Image (tube, rainbow, N blue to C red; front, side, top):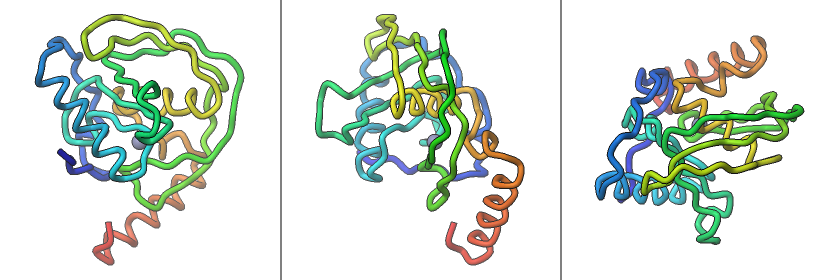
Length: 169
Ligand SMILES: [Zn+2]
């Protein structure tokens, strides 16, 4: 089922998610629906707050549905190691049409639970590292617009307000 993606400034996006405690059929359904929703928008990642569910859950698939082994469900994820810096363009399904360069760590190691509740660690670099950081920010209630320089942030907030006035946001 394709879920509705909430857009900035919906308050659910700025609220830290609740820990995932139940690894049941309902959670598996939510994760499946989040993958379907991500693919329908040609995205590579989506966090539960973006579909209005305030939980520490995110799905990532850099292959956009082409490689089953690339599907990652991260419950209660955290970054446990970082190295270096990268500065590349990012977008966010809760900010349609906004793309901007954001400073991120070049490499990260994360720790998370899979859809069955099993803890695992994983390393990511380049795009995957960026995606981990972007999605883990979401479960903490942090949005990429607040990782931009003040100048870029103000420019984009003005663009959003203009789109809102025109009924296009
Ligand atoms: Zn996002």
